Image (cartoon, rainbow, N blue to C red; front, side, top):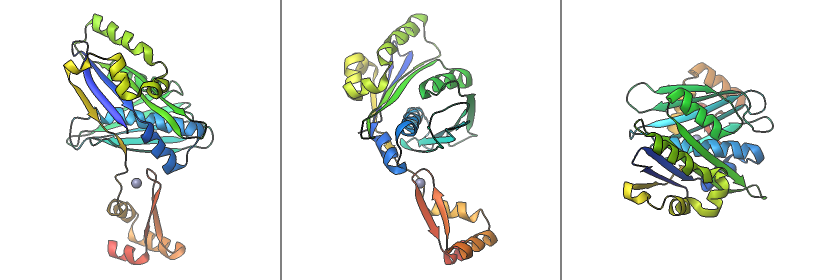
Length: 273
Ligand SMILES: [Zn+2]
């Protein structure tokens, strides 16, 4: 089961998140038939989305992270909502690594205008790029160590990690304590493999329950529907849709996130308008 633990530690001046996302990554591998570096890259991005979805305040909140990389990796896009329904896709040519390009984050609290932040990719490592994003775009000192470990059969053996974020009033002493507490998580996937999220809390943060410990269950789930994709189709205009339906027999609208085709017949097109 996927897990996200959240708590405030070190005099409630540091927010701690511990993620176990092995099943989330396996769901993505299965949905998109991924292997190798593409599975690892998307798995790390999905874990990042699960973390950021866990930080949303509004019930209608949603967050998306998109990487447009130069060269091999193409596009990676992940998103999540307040219910921790997480989804994503990777569009890769070859290796599936993140080289050059930009990370764009859109946070929507469901009320006012969404927050949009963008940073340049500084590495092919998702953790480092996320830290850079928080540092430059949100100006919140954040330590991120997330990782994905694949088994020889291509399935995800372990995924997840630890994220710590300093609250604005964090003292120097507690900042140092947080830095020290991050040290064991250099290889996050290995730690999750050995301990699981439950074990990480038990072994490394035994005092945490005093400050309140919250547990959430992220899940790979696409929020698309025939209704939504009908609206996407309709935006192409009636004449164009009828042309496609006549030339190709039907109109197919593809959802990248769950790899599903929605098929609309000529009759369906007529009813749209
Ligand atoms: Zn979908």
